[in-house]
Every structure is written in C-alpha cells, then in structure tokens.
Image 1 (cartoon, rainbow, N blue to C red):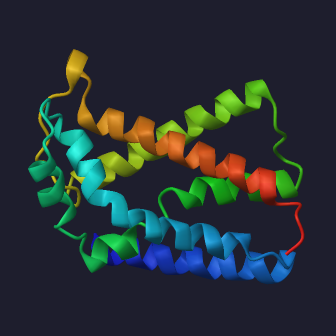
Image 2: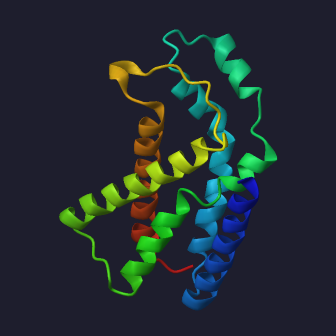
Length: 167
C-alpha cells in the first residue's frame, strides 16, 4: 500500500512538473511541497483525534517529540493537493467556474474523495488506529475526512487567489 502511495506521489510530481512547464507557473510544484511540509504537523493531528479532554504541557511535548516517519512525509504530498490541482486544471480549461453552488458541490466532492482515501487507508492499517470516541459519536474517519476536505478547499481558494499573479 505504501509503495502504491509513493508511486501516486511520483505521478503527481510528474503531472505538476508538466503543468509547471506548460503554464510557466511554479504553483503546482509548490502545492505538493506544501503537503510535505504539512506532514510535519501529523503529531498534532493525532493529538486532536485522540480526543483527550485534559491536555497538559507534558502530553503536548511528548507528542511533538515523536517526529513523523519518512514514509508518512513522502505519502503526505498528494492527498490534499491532488483535488485542488484537479479543480484548478478544470478552471483553466473552463470546465469549472467559481460560485456558491459549484463551491458547495466542490466541497462535497472533496469530502467524498477524502472519505475514500480514509477508507482505503484504514483497510491495510496504513493509518494509526489509536483513537478514542469523539463527542456526539462522530466517527474519527468522518471527522478526519471533513477536516481534510476543508484543507483541500482552502488550498483551492489559495490556488485560485494567487494563480494570476506574476512570478
């Protein structure tokens, strides 16, 4: 499973390199690199999903002292960036237009995409399963997919906002 995720990352890098060359804009490569930098915050996400009511400084320090693995940093390059780059490509080819209805439909598509990624990652045990129940009985994979869809949607907003600026 990790080999397939790294292979997908290489395909995404190839596509981002091609789009960077074609559009003469390095934003596509920077988005994937931002996913790798965002992987450094994985211990904080695990602390959030643990659902501990009492957060102490010792718990926070112990969480931050466990760095993410090299494989998880490599894998983290594509999940958030891929849907945003795809929608930006649709925007550039005029198959997608920004608006309130298309924005809501885009968020739902991002949510379904991240739910699919969560379910695929849960099957072989790629994601750690040391989660406690969240308030109101919300399943952790659903909460994780909602948060990931928000990150992808914010990334799309940033991409659309800065796309037209000169480099």
